[in-house]
Image 1 (cartoon, rainbow, N blue to C red):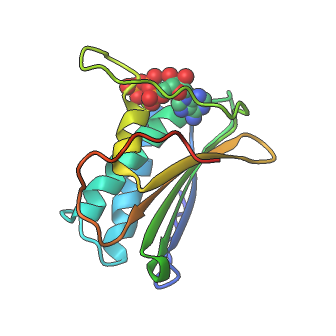
Image 2: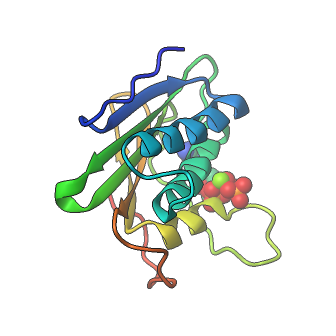
Length: 154
Ligand SMILES: Nc1ncnc2c1ncn2[C@@H]1O[C@H](COP(=O)(O)OP(=O)(O)OP(=O)(O)O)[C@@H](O)[C@H]1O
Ligand SMILES: [Mg+2]
């Protein structure tokens, strides 16, 4: 697999198989890219980004999977706006994602709740084929207390 992690261009774009292995690779690639860009594996940003990539990639390979189609991970570091942008694109077109109220006893339906709590902003964007679920983190913020609930941005 050819992986390009640009420095100081600070963008990673990688297509991955829509499988559990692909989702695991997405996580690993994200933390490796961040380490290359100066955010080590044990940093707050790396931990938080890893969680977000894990949830979004897991969703892409379960709910967003179209047989025979890959999904794509994109990470963009935007220091000027204090932003790490995470994009996970899959081939399935429905734009609306159910936003579930996670209850402690629920065994599923937690992924987007985690995204909601950890991301500064997140949303879903249509593409020619499929959609992109994106989330943004502040480069400087440590993990914050639960913010007010808000739905996905467009
Ligand atoms: N990439 C996606 N494509 C299509 N539907 C999605 C996608 N991501 C999430 N969804 C929808 O949103 C719902 C909520 O997602 P969420 O990640 O919160 O829960 P889950 O994946 O069902 O369970 P868990 O993440 O706890 O294993 C999903 O059950 C699915 O219906
Ligand atoms: Mg999920």
